[in-house]
Image (cartoon, rainbow over all chains, first blue to last red; front, side):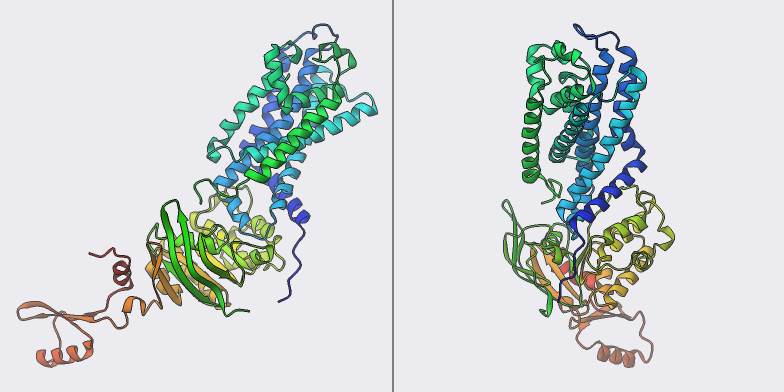
Length: 270
Length: 281
């Protein structure tokens, strides 16, 4: 028997990405949960916070806007994928897919593609809101545009990989949102989203610096906020090299975790 | 190509101290409909999931379409179809969208609209999965199982929870697939289902295949003694015999015509099955 040509992995992956997006936008709860939360937080805190960051002329709300964009990326990747995949494992979607000739890589391509589209959309919305409400400006130079693009791309990649990896942690799809939101919320508080990172107690700063969110926030600030903010940064510098290094390390760790821990079936399913 | 679609020798699956499957031998020829019967926990689903490439076996030889399902390949996956035991995905996608999407996984899929028609969901093609009834969902499962035009179809307890009417319609669908030459391995709790659909039935109990036969012959049903009972002058009487016709004829002469309360019965598939799995008393 001659083997028929299999459809390409990339084509199946992109087709899955389109299907995931279609399903996502039709699911109002999912849209509200992953997409709208950062927007609502931005609106609420944006009206509460006021004043300039100590020792600088930068409006704290702009600092906060950069942080909430980083949180938005984490929400559309880490939370959305972690919860979504845990549910798909629980309800048998993954098992069904595993029983078809769909290459496993196509599943991850689809997840990554849909997460990327949602992250871009989320970022654009938050950015426009930040501009309208707090005067957040687009990057002022080509170098800053370049910084924005690579920090965004690295942030999406790392959070996507960690979201896929973390999906194996919750015992059930139902509990996944609760389980994943704990680290997500804590990280927002210790990574310089709601508070100026530099003003956090040093122990908290050290803890925050272990995780990628702090570095994504810092990278986005370096693209969106003026250098006059530097006195309020922990190293008085943007530390691009260190941002790249930490995110790369998390990317490698996340990828290794995905390869070693990903399960197509529930724990109780043999 | 091998003559058998499925060949199993000495299959074992061990969970901790428990032998869930303990030495199963099985042959299913191409084009056959084989039903695997057995109570919960007998090893039925474990066996099928090993054949589907979903579980690894502890021991034994297994060949499904000439491939070891312990090492599933894409090509092999494209030649089998799986209708899983339970599915409760709730994607906000329509029947047509799902079937079309899954068609894209296969090198030579069937026409999606034809498949939707074949499972009787044409009227519901635009409806989202979340809006379908249980029976309609099951038909979507079948549509996704056959969209790749499989040589071998696994159906794991396909009609559990169906009302009798839905079950009959489902059987027609399976019969038409079998009529097209698809080899089918079916697991079921329902004896009437096995009897209606299967060429051969295997009964699995305690991790072993205790018997394989046609539904008619299973457990020696065809040769089992018939029970002739009637109402005699002293009340109800019964006799077990290999020659019921002769008994009835003699009784007819004795009563000079009509025999009061006459019945002639053979063990039902259910009686045979219950005695095989040791549930009879």
